[in-house]
Length: 139
Image 1 (cartoon, helix red, strand yellow):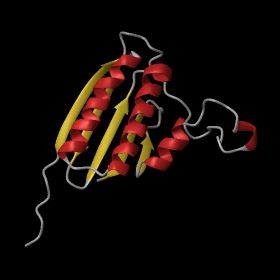
Image 2 (image 1 turned 135 degrees about the vertical axis):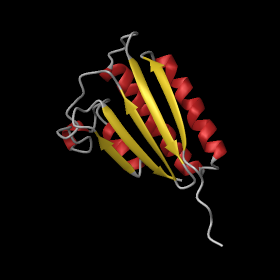
Image 3 (image 1 turned 90 degrees about the vertical axis):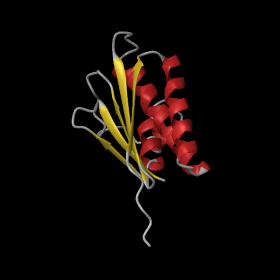
């Protein structure tokens, strides 16, 4: 008998644009990891990517403006989790980013987030404006 697919569950967070609100996201990631018995490697990748993207949305997208929100949606089933993180900022040019592995950038303390996220997530897609990213993780 074929295995029945688990129904998709939806989760939503609206985070105020302050760094302390990242703990709400971390709690949700832990809850989902426990519920779906996500492997330690995938959990670590999810936590790293989502923390990075949400922090960037708060700091760079919304510029820590308390009236602006970061919206996080997750769709999870037994095979994958898809996270959408949206800020209320102007967006950014995610195509023409400096290569953090280029010799002239190796000592820079910033500019590695998108590079890391693209390597750790199974899929990373930005909207045209650059204020929303969708991350897919196979679970």
